[in-house]
Image (tube, rainbow over all chains, first blue to last red; front, top):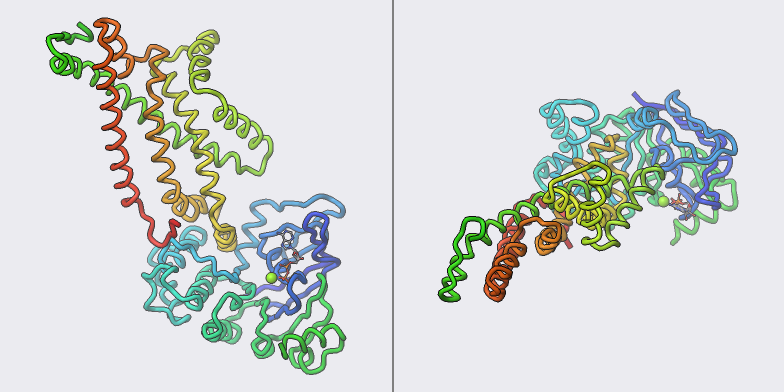
Length: 255
Length: 230
Ligand SMILES: Nc1ncnc2c1ncn2[C@@H]1O[C@H](COP(=O)(O)OP(=O)(O)O)[C@@H](O)[C@H]1O
Ligand SMILES: [Mg+2]
C-alpha cells in the first residue's frame, strides 16, 4: 500500500518572504524521490508542508486522492482537524535531529502512537515494535533510553517509530546530516532496505549524493524554491542539462 | 482563656508552653490554607498556561490580562477586594475560603509563567514528532509534553509553595484565625508580644525546613529518567 503525491501551483511564504512559487511536483505511488540542492532552496519546506507542519498560501496539494486547496489570495488556511489527521495517518517523517521522546524507553517510543492512534492493544503494539527493532538491528536496545544511544542508533529507532504507524508515504529530511561520519552507513543501510523491501512512497532530502544515486527512482534538483531539473539519477548525475545543476553537482562532488 | 486554653504567666517558659496549643490550632488553619491554596495554584496555573497557548485571541487576550493583573497588583488589595466587594454582589464566602482562593489565584498567575517557560523550553522537534505520529493534542500534552515539563518545573513550584506559606498571615487581615492572628490576640491580652511572635517565627522556620526536605524527596521520586534537567 502506498500513495501518490501531487503539488499543484503551490505557493508558500514566510511572512513576505516567498519560499515556494508555482511549485509543481508529482510523485507516483511507490516511487523513491530524492530532493537535492543548496541549503535554503526550500527542500525541507516541501516535506514539512506534506507532513502538515506548515500551512501554505495558494495552490493545491493532493495526497492519495485527498486534496486540499488554499483559496487564491486568502490568508493562511488551516485545514480541519479531521482532514489533518487523515493526512497524518498516511504520512510519516524522519527528522534530521531524530526527535525521539527522551523520557520514554525505545520500546515506549515505538508503542506510544500505535496504541494511542491506531488503537492497537499493548501486546500487539509491542510485538510489532520488537519486529521493527529487529529490522533496524536494535533488538537489544528496547529497554534503553534514547540518551543512552549513539546518534546512528537513535535515528534507526526514529525510522522504526515512523514505520510503526504504517505510513504510505515516508519523508526523510537529511536523516544523516546530524551524524558523525562513521555512523552514517548504518542509517543509510536501513533506509536502503526500505526502498527495496517495502512498498512505500519515499521522499528524501539528502546531501549523500552517492546514496541518492543508488536508491532513487528520480532525483529533483532544487534552487530558489523551484525544481530546476529532474530525472533519473544517471541522467542528473552523468548528464545534467542545466548549468545550475552542473555547478551544484561539481561543488558538492568535489567539495 | 483563649480558645479554651489557660494562659500561664509565671515564667517565659511556662507562658510559651501554655500558648503553644493555641498557636497549633492556628497552625492547622495555616497549613490548610497553604495546601488548599497550592492545589488551586497548581491546577489553575496550568489552566492559565494552556489557555494562553490557545490559537484564538479571544481566549489568550483575556487570560493574559487576568494573569498580568493578578501578578502585578498587591495580594492584600486583591484580598480586600474579594472580601468586601463580593458580598455586595450577593456572594458571601467564608473568610477562610475567600483568602485561600485569592492566595491560590495569585500564585496560579506566578505558576502559569513557570509552566509557560517549561513549555517553551521543550524543543520544537518534540511537538513536530508528536504531530508526525498523528497524536492528538490531548495525548501530546499528556504523554509527551507534561512528563518532560513537570520534573523541570518542580523546583520552582516548590519554592512557590514555601513562599505561599509565608504569605498566609495576610489572611489574618480578613479575620481568618491563623497563627499570626492568634499570636496578636495573645499579645493584646497579655501585653507580652515577644514570646508569641518568636514562637510563630520558630514554627514558620521549622515548617519551611520540613517543606524543603519533603520537596527534595518528591523531586527524586518523580520520574525523570532520560530527561536532562540541566
Ligand atoms: N520558520 C521559518 N520562518 C521564516 N523563514 C523560514 C522558516 N523556515 C524556513 N525559512 C526560510 O525558507 C527558506 C527555505 O528553507 P528550507 O525549506 O529549510 O530550505 P532547505 O531545506 O532547502 O535548506 C529559507 O530561505 C529559510 O530561511
Ligand atoms: Mg533543510
